[in-house]
Image (tube, rainbow, N blue to C red; front, side, top):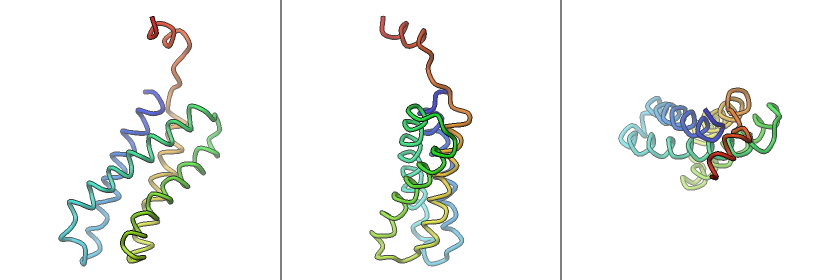
Length: 122
């Protein structure tokens, strides 16, 4: 699977799991569906970014750091919209999703070879 597609799929799965962890915060259980959808979307964005980065830079440590930074930035956006409430409950899993997707796209994603790219353009 190519790096960007792997990032999208894994980001969506891990993002949904991230959103489901909100169940452990009783005050937000009523909004669990919206949280899971938002976290899935956040994971997809992190996956696209990590996959794109993995295509450009062939370094696992840099991929993890980039994924972590993107995940943290997206999670912070959610925290800022809530006025800082549930800071650690949002930041930790969101950052972890980014780091895991960054690692997986570097480690398991494939780069398209030049022959496949040449055939696709014909």
